Image 1 (cartoon, rainbow, N blue to C red):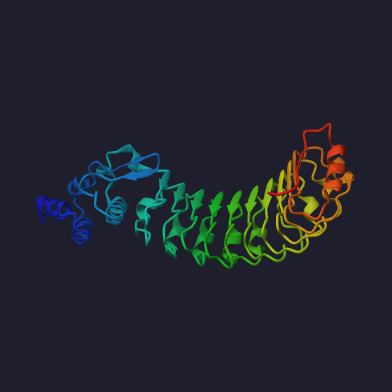
Image 2: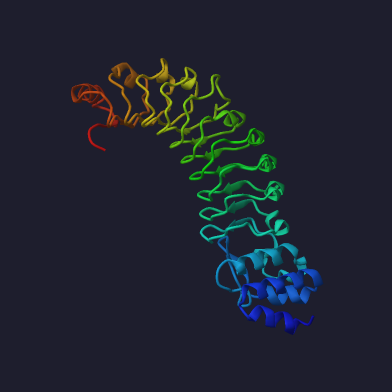
Length: 326
């Protein structure tokens, strides 16, 4: 098959012909064919820009480019952006499947697949040993493959706005995770998160979590904890042990009282108690939270008089107390 014949297949813009040309190039393994097909294709701020021969309608061009990049000899990748890419942003590309290109993906430290109707992930994603960040926001996932537990270098994981009912125990091996977003799912518990000792930010709002772990997770570094809109009902006694917390979100969690010793959170800057049946807060709590800058009491059962007492008690501090209609 000549270069002219492959070019002709690519120039048809027909998805089937384009994919046929790609398979031919991958089979023949001639550097000149790879270079011809990929001419003009490059990465710009992590976004894949397709050259003239791969610019087809739909997602065919992206699949074709990634398949070629995963198999191309290094000598054909003359664009420096493609030789050792660190960041690939494929968000909002309407990908129904993830292009099979582990040879190209394996070099990445950050991969963003958000806002694509993927629904599933291939197990080979677990071989991307260099990954430090993986974004899978709103990808239709109903489950996370156990293979992701092999990504032990991962620092950030975004699984928000999916259909997850559980996080597999295999993910507890991700002991370098620092930022995790699992909000807007259908999770009922967070036991897997107890394996993440480096955690600094955990956002798990808008799930169906009814209880937190019985014993204190190794979250000594946790700064931001968001649990709003979960039917918790009560809070564990170990919560005040999270001494580095600066944000604690507990809106609409059906709690009526706070754990004793919450004042130990001396770094807490924002406390969100919206929409809970809390009828009383002692002024002593405000005294023990010197860093507190915002206290959200909207839709609670505290009377306006009680809120005014709290306001007067801290009138000389920059504390903002929210009360009334949202």
